[in-house]
Image (tube, rainbow, N blue to C red; front, side, top):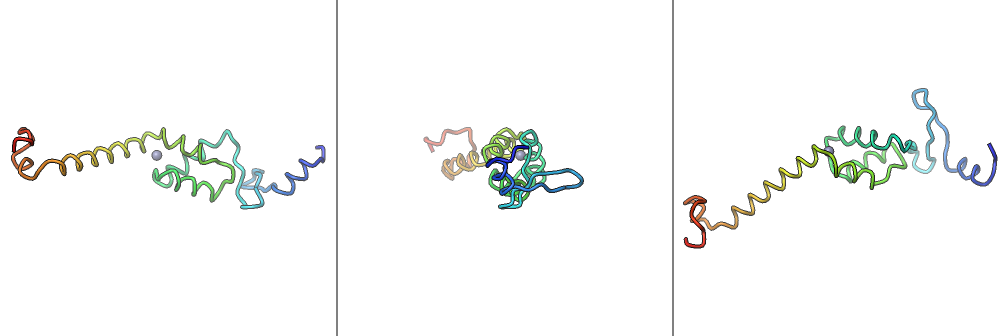
Length: 121
Ligand SMILES: [Zn+2]
């Protein structure tokens, strides 16, 4: 390997460590392991599922405890397409809509049932 400025920059900022017999690159600043780009999605899925489909910020925070280089945009992209989270947010939205609908109808109309139009009561 050519030992130019770039080499010394990398040696200064990163170090090689061994994790369960596998060599990994660790950033010295926050001691986070550098993930290989190909593994980003797997890492995000594992952690997102492990913390029971929590939001973007909590998932990213948990990832940052272990890895240094997984950007928030990747986490956002994954969670935006997560089936379970989509299902959860749809249910929440439906519940909110029902609550708004019932608070809009006056008390008398609600008692007589939804078949009668509320503006004549
Ligand atoms: Zn999810």
